[in-house]
Image (cartoon, rainbow, N blue to C red; front, top):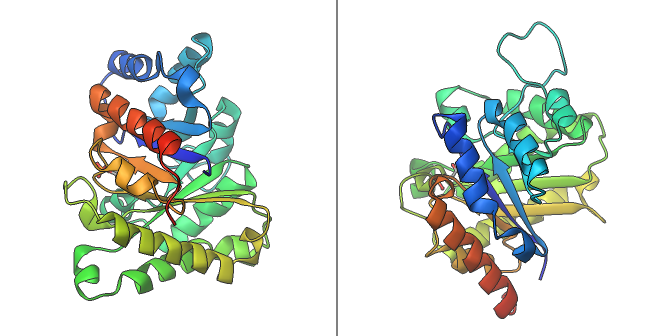
Length: 268
Ligand code: PGA
């Protein structure tokens, strides 16, 4: 089975570094040896990245780190922003871009997202591009159109600049499933993920060939439903929000991933 990847999106949690530290330790200790070819990425708030990276290093944890967002310039007069270059210099490997909470609350447009994606690639971080339709769009049967449009707009800059791409993660996150408990049925998620892979192969020559492209599912993933997604070969893992900051629940998710990956032959 392909390598699976689980990304823990802590969002704007927890409220103190002490708690963040505890979360990292309790999630990781004892898991490290079992990880095998599972990539586990923690995406805490920016201000915890450096201390947690140092902590992980001192405890020799195989933790990988991601940022929840970033700006598109490397340096300069952009008050309040964090650049992909800064993240790279810190040892961060992934950057989530275009999360629906940023598209919604921060009014991030596809233009902005396309610039961020380009800059993340240029700095040799792996972008985790989030796409997905709203409830209304799904009611209208528009999910494939919406996701196709988002991919084409958000990856436009890398096409224009003919950037050579090595690693890309796309997270299919239907907006109606995020934080609601109303998760997308695994078969529907599989259909959308296969569709996303088709679009990427057909439209982005930079992405075809020997590249490492993963497409994940995100939206109310928990320990009870995780194996129903990752048992499919085409679903390369999950982006986990709420459940990733509940220590026992997240540990159960990781155990389910181990069990599924080890014991079940991948389903098509
Ligand atoms: P959720 O969030 O798991 O809490 O639904 C997922 C996400 O927003 O990435």
